[in-house]
Image (cartoon, rainbow, N blue to C red; front, side):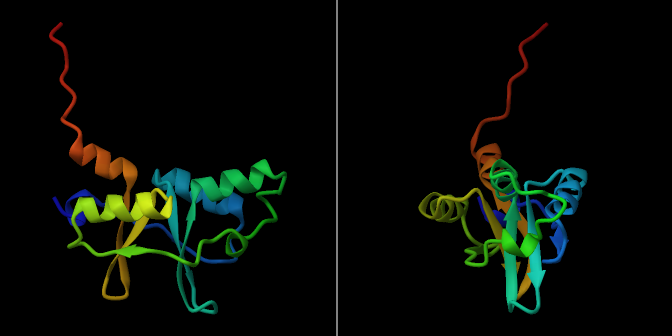
Amino acid sequence: MLVRDAMSTVVLTIGPTHTLRQAAALMSTRRVGAAVVHDPDAGGIGILTERDILNSVGLGQSPDTERVHDHTTDDVVFATPSWTLEEAARAMAHGGFRHLIVLEGDEPVGVVSVRDVIRCWAPARQHAPA
């Protein structure tokens, strides 16, 4: 199975000057655990995850004043739609992260998460007869 079969095509893109509260609200509304951060001044694409927001709040920082750019991971590993799920899982396990931005050319076309991989690899839930 390939990344294109598992990835979410709901790509939330936010800017570096959003506050963490704004990012969290957008992520919650879209029901995603990561946002692609497009920062033309920094020269590329980064990622902000729910864990980044949680870590900031856990440190006592205010989500109303903290900006996305201060919590974005810029050293991102990207996947392509043609990667196998094994390649994606290996990259996530090796890097210690749970999301990969999927690029086609230079454009983000999806995000694949550990949850997406598990959903594809685990057999469908069987409902017990009533």
